Image (tube, rainbow, N blue to C red; front, side, top):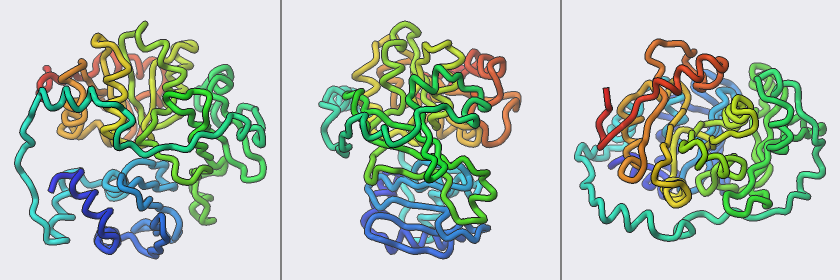
Length: 348
């Protein structure tokens, strides 16, 4: 099986999903109708890891500040390569590993991406912006200390929940930009204290919000993408706001909440960007150091758009840094020296 097929298999067989977690050392596992909670292999907090029992198998490791898919979560926690994890799961479950490449049908791909973006996507529930009124519209000093301008925090409507001590990050729908579809709360307490107390760092206030059917920041970036001829895809919301700050309010970046990009997101991006727009994948260093995985991500775009990714050749980032975490100078250097992918092969 390939990664997508493997996730579909695990989604349909929750007992196998739990077995895989145990295989990689996760413990204190509990399951409800909509999610699995467990502790990290080296942790004691039984709610530190959450795996959503939806088809995409979204996962969060709160102490590691990770939000993405299940396989990526294992990669993040264990430090293994993506291929090693896939191979290990196949061996553990007695499944056959597919080494063959997919047959490429260019016309089929064109037909697929021309279909309505609304097909086969999880429908997010719309809420009016008034749902945010219960939270204080004030920039939190943690976000300012991260290098995000107060004007950007105001534009992205960042708020604070004093009752739960969480920074509120609203996610607006990518088509109905005045509608709230997700509310992410980031705890203001230090990560080590949160783990000791068993408190998740991130919390989704809206149950069932599908990040794979949305792009954070699209509503603020869309008018600047044509001007820059570039769309940057980050993992986290903070990176999007940092890029907007660096561009003095003219940011052209979105985030996907992890290091996987859904078919729905690929379709939406192709349908809503010009043919001259370059797609730049700017995931965290621990992901972009896997050249093969970055090639595969870029290959999903490069039949229709120029695609590239950020590559830290000279190790100017720490192991889990986002490319934009170490200041303007390093970010601009990394962006300038990004690696372009053409027809599945890296350009030297």
